[in-house]
Image (cartoon, each protein chain N blue to C red):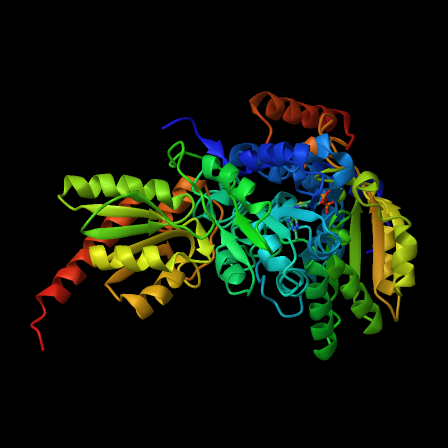
Length: 321
Length: 283
Ligand SMILES: Cc1ncc(C[n+]2csc(CCOP(=O)(O)OP(=O)(O)O)c2C)c(N)n1
Ligand SMILES: [Mg+2]
């Protein structure tokens, strides 16, 4: 594994790269450009950057207006404000209108750390994926963030791209193809499938290695696109393994786990457990400590895998009717 | 509450220096936090908490207490320092700021910290909550008073102006808002990012009784608060001109000190400056 890098840092650099050839890209921020890293774009292309001040709702509407006039709007603030504060503006001015607005939200999830619950969105995936027309992408690492940005520039309609605050390890191998809506089998396995999004992919790979030591062959699937969801891949791995664990830095209500459960309930119901935050707000603390406290580590994934395997055995052992 | 005597002013200054030490110490030990806005709002909190508000740390849920909503929630180290000094909770709590499992959150949490009246941190929401508290006081036929502290960057939020309309429409004269007008937000000076001016005229146009003061001068602050509390028929807005990072030379008026903790060297220097001020009797 190479050195760690924050997805928001990659975002800032990639925006500058994209802005060089694409004069139709405009960027908006709400007084967080140093944190979201749109400040880099602002430095290079000041005339195509709009700092809207601390006015997220106004910013979403303005981005819609620019998009309705032919521009591709990249809008950034923290996830909690992008998805939460300005929800109705996103719904009515951006999603309903199917405009080319790319909402790039940083500081998602518990790993915001010390700022605490008011700044840790654990609901944004749920809020965004329920909106018609919205594409929801959560890259696994910096490498995938860059790939996703290049793909999403011209992807039709509105997009929510979920990024984080901390530096995260590389998990996606060089040359892995990124395609919106296509999940990635990071590791094959027969016994149980660990289905992860965002930074939980790294932990899923670690968990798979631990499980291997116990003789359990775990598959790892990266669902970087929560919407549109790769129904086919999900149904296949569920059928192949017969046991599923999902992992997300988000509430277990409405996020990846819910989305996967919705698909599998209709196509291939198997024993399943969702690893994520259990219907609670976060709190202040060091990111690693919070991930531990709220049950979001590879250890918790291993536990969940063992337990879902017990359920699978029980089901298989059931006498035929 | 009359005008301040020389001795009273000296006392307040001395308290403020101690609280500034606490703020620096807290943020240093936490390794993160917002010193700039905490230092700019501190003197406003000192006058309100030590000279104006009716509160009893021994019964923080007393129905008749005055209420203060720190709408610019990131400045909570200042609020926590005051609340600890007044005895709402033990001073040791201050040194656990922002640590996992501790009651003092990175942004104020009314369910975790005694004396905190409203959970804030998402800017622009506190004035509406204060309006609700003012309406409740009126329904209760209570003389309790409601204070809301707003950041200047914060009032770029549309909700503030919705609340501004509500407060004057409902003639909430039991509500006093204070604007911590330090001129800075995260991305720089407000005049460059998104200007508020003419800000006094805006609040006047929204139906408020507007006063303007030096937000670090206790006598003028108290005078303005008194006038605000006496004013009938409309809410009052005190525009307090402040200095972000007030009291620590290298933090004053520096956008960089909005949201970062001092390193060891800076921490020592900050405390040394406060010690010198104590010796010289200046603020
Ligand atoms: C709704 C919302 N948007 C953005 C932020 C991030 N943020 C925290 S403090 C701050 C700047 C606040 O500036 P100001 O109100 O002037 O505070 P002060 O200068 O007193 O620190 C911003 C943008 C937030 N907390 N809430
Ligand atoms: Mg300010």
